[in-house]
Amino acid sequence: MKIVTIFSTKGGVGKSTISANFSSVSLLEGRDVITLDFDPNNSLRYHFGFAQSSIDGHALATLSKTSLKNQIKVSPDRSKILPFGNLDDDQLNAYEELLLQDPMMLRKEIESMNLNASDIVIIDAPAGSTIYSQQALNASDVVVVPLLADASSYLTLPQSITMLKRHCLNRPNFDGFMVILNQVNRSFELNTNITEIIKTKFVNHVFAEIHQDQAIPEALACGTNVLSYAPESLGAQDMIDAAQILETYFLGK
Ligand SMILES: Nc1ncnc2c1ncn2[C@@H]1O[C@H](COP(=O)(O)OP(=O)(O)O)[C@@H](O)[C@H]1O
Ligand SMILES: [Mg+2]
Image 1 (tube, rainbow, N blue to C red):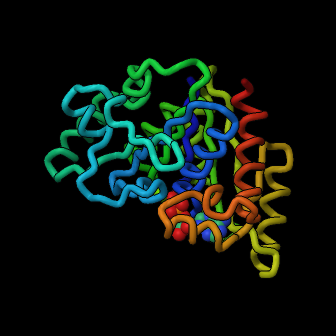
Image 2 (cartoon, rainbow, N blue to C red; image 1 turned 135 degrees about the vertical axis):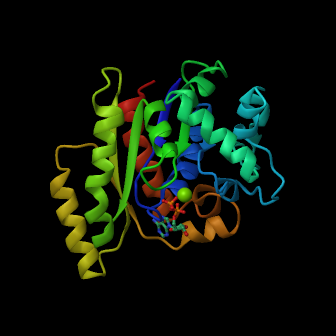
Image 3 (spheres, rainbow, N blue to C red; image 1 turned 60 degrees about the vertical axis):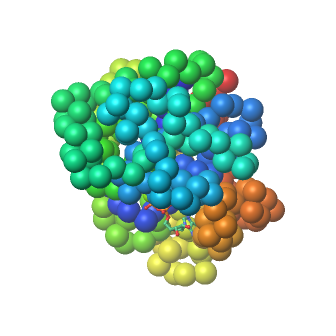
């Protein structure tokens, strides 16, 4: 079992979108993939068509010391998701207390599911340098860092790298990280210029590019992923290419 954490200190860069879409790409590749929402806003489920607010999730399972496996939901396209769940303030405080007590708690909870060696768990980490992102990084074997081709993403990239250094890069068993430049659109000059700067910066690094494509937010609006919604779109093809780069460099069967 490998844990792939999708992480950036910046919000709105495509972490949830990539987490949700990678799970369906990997399904196509014949792997068993579980996508775990580690954001207390509990919104990854919308990408899988689970709109009802009463949905349980892995955080309540941890609090009640029951198996996370019972909380796995299967979407219409057969993707497997572990929602965070809806916690009230007291439950959230109790959960965060557990996170504070054990920096490896999430890893241990995932390991307690006893998944197969070839299985993948994708963690959708929330933005910021919080206790959640620390846990998600501590749990990871591989990290995917999405960023946008804009000034704000570029300027906050060092914060993400600092977090990676602190929680991943000094671990001997850590497999490495991949950068994904998302929402690339060469019809805008600034977008093109920042794309080139970032490509130069990561020229010797595992790197992928995903174009800006309206099919991606449209798929979310329909509660599904872009591979089901518009399989011929540029966005779908880019997701497949990026997931294959991840597979080739870090997940090799
Ligand atoms: N390649 C893309 N092209 C167009 N829109 C995108 C693309 N990637 C993500 N989006 C949209 O950007 C918004 C933010 O993405 P999201 O995955 O929620 O970011 P994060 O999880 O990092 O906060 C969403 O509305 C999503 O549909
Ligand atoms: Mg998100």
